[in-house]
Length: 229
Image (cartoon, rainbow, N blue to C red; front, side, top):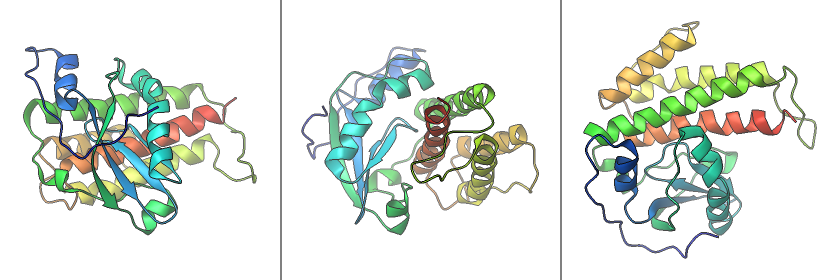
């Protein structure tokens, strides 16, 4: 189970030169920094330094438990061990209608902190890991997926189209645009270039943009996996 949340920030240590795992440990500090986005009907627990590691539940406590449950599943995406460290809740932000609808939508004071250099490169790499994982899941999934408890939900190709179009719609948020029907590889390249430049001209801070993009693609990758059996 997750550790009891605290309100203090996390410390950091200098990473070994050229060591990607070391940089990830440094980003997280001695604990995994998490924030909570709390709406009226649901809450998200979001790993601040690990784009894509984000889970939703009805209460903040349940969201933290879900985040912990997905620790190893997320590690399988990024190809390295996610730090086996307790969570440290660094803050709580108020959610909105989008939160209750099912998407993390609130920014926090941490998003005012610039994300640059090696840490920006590391988090962009994690988004690319999420894309690569999504592509692998799609390639091995059946065209028709098991429906939800009320018979709802998209099939595989519908999810793919939804994710691609959502990412195109997010482009102005990171200071760029992509015409309709742009091939997905080309669209992703535009998104990556915008993020690496710091999302200049966009309305989303680059750290928030990375978390939102990676959450969306992994949430649907895991949906496809769960509905393929």
